[in-house]
Image 1 (cartoon, rainbow, N blue to C red):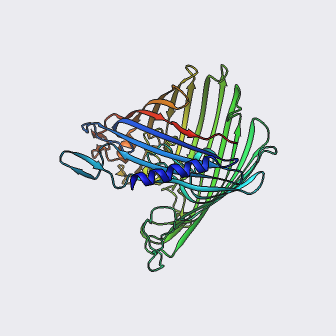
Image 2 (cartoon, rainbow, N blue to C red; image 1 turned 45 degrees about the vertical axis):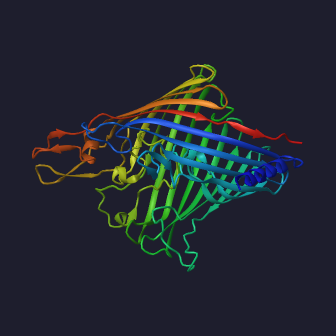
Image 3 (cartoon, helix red, strand yellow; image 1 turned 90 degrees about the vertical axis):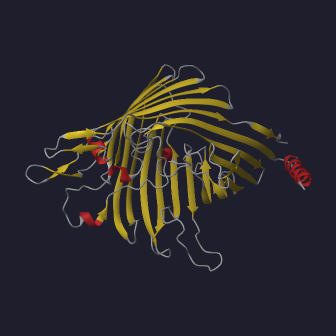
Length: 461
């Protein structure tokens, strides 16, 4: 049986590769990360020992391109080393949930500049702020949906329209079930990008997303997000000199609550950065600030308190942003929904043709007032101090070849007393003085090897 299957697969590959004006490629991806963690995602006490681990992503990618369409089929196994759930006393056997289909799509060419992609696919737009493939995740993130593209390189106009829907219908009864109430039920977007010249481009992003009611799967709460994204002197054609960018989003509609029901939403996100590039693009220094809206606990206006002011990051990338790579502030609940303001400084230096060093410094703080559980001498509630601490990210990348790259990195966070209190890691006495500080040094150190072999590629005829 195995021999017959192998012969059939080989015959199909030969047939596809011999088709006129067609090309077949078979590629791989092996991404292995070794890491030492002491407070990654959530701070830990000083007596807590560091943990060590390794995770791995393995992909087998089949690509096919012809005159009228192209297709992709990507098999993926994502696992933590040693996490196999089938094992015996003498060794691991296999993992029942690690293997799956990451991408499976077909793209129909509708004309010279337009196409329609159907199936499971990656989406990433505008720095992955709200729509991302989350490549840092071992599993990554793909979407089941439709994508219409109209890309005119001559005019510099790029239009993308995406529609996705997570169908939780019971195939037996036809009724909707609420299998995954926490995830987005649907994400739909229109992204319009215009390249004004070689250095400046502007994008307009419109997202329409929805979540099911936590108790009733037939109720869907929809939210709209509109954004403008400006980029100057970034991208492949970037030159020495000043560069920068701006991203501004406004969000409104209905927010599904964790129990049941919904709340009106009115929120915003802003990122502004400015930098300078020199030494034939070897050195980049930039500074910026991120802002995520949240709730002001001191505002007693009744109308204000009926509205959700916490910005929803949807399926956006979290790891490259928001306070550093320890990922302490990637969810609104991490700041108790008070929002955040996050000034940062970044430096990138190309040490050689193959090596690159990176440094990031983050100063996250609360965007709005938030009460502690303590009282002052007058019996009034005490507010948290705004500053949450300082994050430092260090990284080095070395590209040995087109297929092989090594990444080494470390992230460290110095917690403020305010953030320690927020995480219940300090104790105060009756005079509001700290009597016990449990917080240790928070860090995350990793080494990651990425290998992307090209197994097979037929020549175009």
